[in-house]
Image (cartoon, rainbow, N blue to C red; front, top):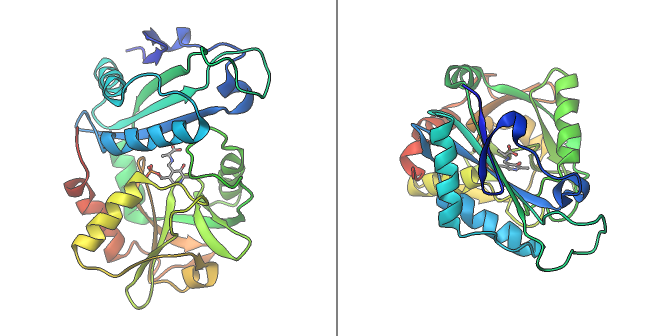
Length: 285
Ligand code: PDD
């Protein structure tokens, strides 16, 4: 079955799905995106992803090309046309096509809307989560507004490749104060020896992950102690557990950081429980 993408009003086979060479997303990374999990053929936490998308667009003064409801219809149609049971949808909105000039184009320029969907391998993801992953730390050299989900991801690309080159799976960014901000495409968490869950407070230095938000709700509902603050690598090395959260991985245990074994080197009970219970708390639309 050929994959179908959505490009500016049309559902097209992948080989015909193209954007203009002067699209500002392509030339300036002047573009925002969302990735949403699909499970049982349903979009997980679509409402929150749409709200974050609207915020990213507003921060960059890109007009919302259509209502969140209409975007939702497109995403659901893509899931159906690609027959996705378990997988992801990707939605990208750029400022549109215009002669190359950093200044904003004329206000009549329509944003470019692109969406794709693809299946994920549930058995493979579960097997990975059973074992846990290794991460390495890298300097956080990103711009000061990574709370906006833009496609300007070059530092994330290089960080992830650094991890792979070192035999690890992911990279955790560390800021100038020595605190972990987040992972290359996920939020970072630890469970301290005192059983406190710690994840970086959400300001302009991390993406306010949707999975992070649902996880916080779950933890608070269970009365667990959570601190939203920066934590150092030393704290992470000494942690009882570590894990990361994102729409593609949900809760992924981290068992090794920079060669230091975390806890007993196996996924810990908190991360496992959060992973197991996550979809009871997420919204399936
Ligand atoms: N990334 N931090 C960064 C830098 C991210 O890119 C992501 C998500 C997250 C987690 O956000 P959420 O829980 O809303 O998925 C945190 C997506 C999955 C991606 O780029 O593929």
